[in-house]
Amino acid sequence: MEFGWTPEQRARYDTALAAARQRFAPESGAPGIAPADWRALGELGLLGASVEPKFGGGGHGALDTALLFEAFGRGCPDTGLVFAAAAHLFACAMPIAEFGDAPLKERLLPDMCAGRTVAANAMTEPDAGSDVARLATTATPVDGGYLLNGVKSFVSNGPLADVLVTYATTDPAAGHFAVTAFAVERRTAGIGVGEPFGKLGMKSCPAGQVTFTDCFVPGDQVLGERGQGSVVFQESMRWERTCLFALYVGLQERLVEQVIEHVQQRSQFGRKLTEFQSVTNRIVEMKLRLESSRLLLYRACWLLDRDEPGALASALSKLAVSEAAVAGATDAVQVLAGRGYLTQHGFEAALRDAVGGTIFSGTSDIQRQIIARELGL
Image 1: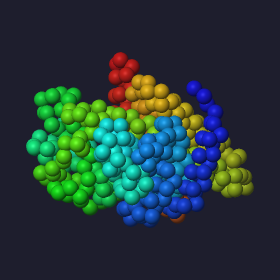
Image 2 (image 1 turned 120 degrees about the horizontal axis):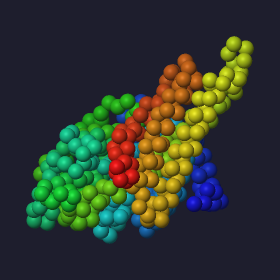
Image 3 (image 1 turned 90 degrees about the vertical axis):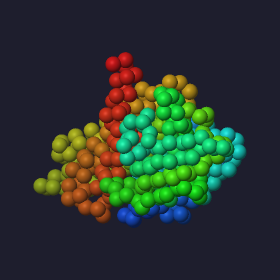
Image 4 (image 1 turned 45 degrees about the horizontal axis):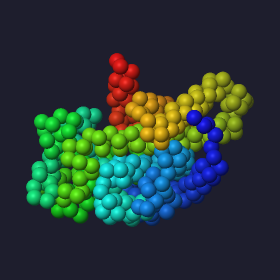
């Protein structure tokens, strides 16, 4: 693996970082995405970074895409907005790009990449969170397509979605081939979207419930083949677990920079905070977790770009980055003390935003199970 960045990668990262710092403000506290912000993300190339250029994307591989999300995670003070972009790209645009037929890609992807539409991944159900193999939502074959019936919960971007990538059971007795993936347009009859949930963090990425009631989906909107839903989902999760968490690498770097700036300026008991070993040790641990998790993430991206097996690498990366983000944000709050606890400085928001990373895309315990399985345990 080459550890250095090419001049093109450095220039792309620096441009994205500067744009993120200049263009976007902290979250307002209200659930939702400002249309102007979403269009700006499209114009800056984030929403279609890994999609082929002929469909409006940037055509970047996993590592280059991750570097863009790392830059935005570091520079954009609204982590929920960056997360919404990542969910849109990795869990929705990439399954369509990799498994949709040509007319479907031509119809949906250009608007998704440009920020003219918002996409949401509807997989989780009220009784099927980590156990995605047991979906109660059904897709019944009818003339020309399928009728979808069921309820999806915790749908990130769901309240605003124009396109829904969803999964439903088509053959209950088919085991691994029981589930089929679909790309469904929001204007389709039979779709009901609930109000945004109240959440601990990432409020700019609204999440809610989506209901399908005799929702007819044409057969040409199946992603892949009937019964291939598990394959589609796992591939989208590999993109998500690998590249999405780059935004949390960027968040960790921002926190390290801000904490260092604080301790260099702050004094207590007549001494600079940098003279207190208990303080500097916390910052060293923040930096250690940042760099360790960054290397695991880059390696997972490298394997994805080489089309090599990467279940172990992506699970290790996801686990390390998400846990490091929570630990780093906690340390930042402790070092900043009272200032860290106040909303006006943004450190408590970073902590709230980081907690979700240990839950979505497979909880930390699920990642540990994947790692154990890959080790033959």
